[in-house]
Amino acid sequence: MDFVRPELIPDPTVRRLSLYLRQLEQLQKNAQLTVNSKQLGGSLGLTDAQVRKDLAYFGTFGHPGVGYNVLELISRIKRILGTDKAWNVVLVGVGYLGKALLSYAGFAAKGMQLVAAFDSDPEKVGQVLSGHEVLPMTHIAEIINRHECRLAILTVPADVAQDVATDLVHAGIRGILNFSPTSLTVPPTVAVQAVDVALQLEQLTFQVSLNSMTRSGVRHP
Image (cartoon, rainbow, N blue to C red):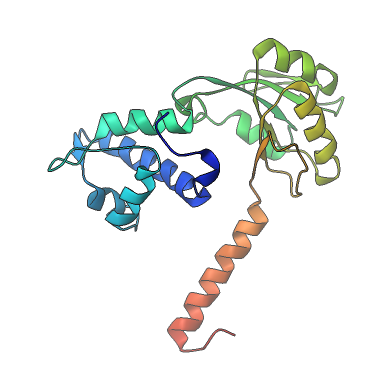
């Protein structure tokens, strides 16, 4: 690939790539062929300079006087994010959240294929949920190896999350989407993305409270 070393790319830039991709895919649905950095940034509340700076980490994009070809930019961003190829994914923990994720249809559109679901509860093992039979934890290594899985979704209670994550890493998983409300300790070769709903809600209530105080003329401490 034609971009700088991954460790030099800011995390916010990578997150914005996903936003650019989502917006570009909407433009594609609307049959729009080209877009410039001002249009792309403005639709997301970003400046055109920010868009150009983000893309510059990954090479040269666009055409002078024309802007970006929508289909071409979609293809290149997908290649950068790795969603231009198929990824087999396992899910561990089929509580309420795990069941909801098993039924989520959006994974396939991003090149993700859920190939197996696991749980330690004997009453859940053997159930078929959204077309997936819930397997016992003892089958994790076998399934990961058979399907060459490198990604896992973790939706287990906090008190067992670290042990399960360790087992996943030993079985060959190299990326974990962690919905469990706890931090995980993994080798530097393993990527973890935490999804903490409570934390996000706290950030949201802070913003709402701050906006309310600003409108009422109350200074925030």
